[in-house]
Length: 619
Image (cartoon, rainbow, N blue to C red; front, top):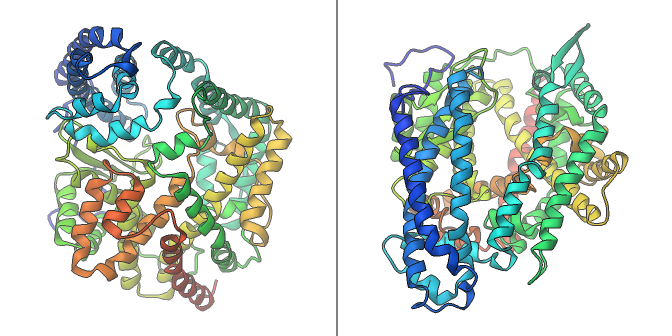
């Protein structure tokens, strides 16, 4: 990597191996191929559809034609997903770098009709596989085309009792666009148009919500508080709309659950737990250990407050940076960051370091600074070439190095699985953070080792404590509110003041005396509660954080065995439940608190070290 320039900021990524432009002939060819394949799906569905009504009672012989048609639909589906998914990833990548990229916006809009058509044409196969007997499923899976799909088929069948008829399922998905999803879009539109009047220094400034949220990372405590109060003031004018949206979204899900409960009751946590491939017992174990860990996390929060010369942690401190100590905060050039990450990854296994070098050499990382770039960082991939891409804005701070290490962890996970069948490459969100948080922890430890002053050490340790407070206190606060809200919503819609009270109670339960005041409007200003496509977008973060730290802890106890086990674990994330995965590769039972307690125990010395740093560094 020595031939790359040594500027602070990162370099642009290279997407040319996929397409030359957003309107190039190669995209047209892919979409034409996808259309032709979907026409073939219609032909095979004509065999499958008449069999659905009697599917439950059919024997293998009666189902022979259906089984053959189902296998063909499965084969075609994998190709269609790739042909639509590739240009979709390309459009997203282009719009991330330039949010005004009109050609990419047009492409993204065009793809919606292809995605909708594919979803509808896939429904008969899903229904058939859920309805038929175990013997028919065994015959379907006992074939080279479908053998690799065993886990996803069997996992999906765990919810077969909750299915509606094909006509009803199509009706639900059709009505959802102007039902539950319309409420989600309304919230997004509100969030995109709100403005905030913020006092920055002695000057009042009018700015958008995203820009104001950026001030929550400002090192000045007063600026962060002003931004937080301004955000809440803007949302407080919209509480009636937000209450209508959150009540409608939850009401839709609860009513749909009631309609699906003809064979056995549906609980509002069933779908998110199933989607994350974890059991209720595992979820309860994780949450109970998080609750046991409240004193440790509150201690970390109070230490962060102390570093700012305060007695308590404010709700505006969630994303605060390490306080400026007057010491030198040397920027880390992009190439130096990549080298540091490659070395840290190599300490686990040389192939991991080589992977980082390959990502850099092939320019599969976007790290530039640009006026039209979208905020945030992510890892994506191109299904046709099975190659990952990492997106971020790299400006040279230690937190940027850690973010880059995190996203490269996601990319390594994807690269490890690249040769698996498509049906085994998709995993639940609870396991999605395994490789990323693992990579982040290795690199954070490497940064701590190279820190030359206590203030530099504090800046690195600060990120770790921020994660601890966020995952052990803030994520459970969100879960607590959402769970209590869904329980109350089963009776009736809640008023804005009732939602504020539920939110405040959740803050007080988890943060307690460490918090200067609750954030009663957090339910309104947190996008996660309004994502119409999935509920409880919170507990998977807690699971992923503790699980990945638990994997990291096994590095010492497993010794030379660790990397083969780790690689095996990543390979199996798309074809096992989290419980089976942990039992096979880590020799642990996730439904019991022991593993989670041992993971939290490794955080205690880190909090002790942070306390020493806070006491040593004058602020």
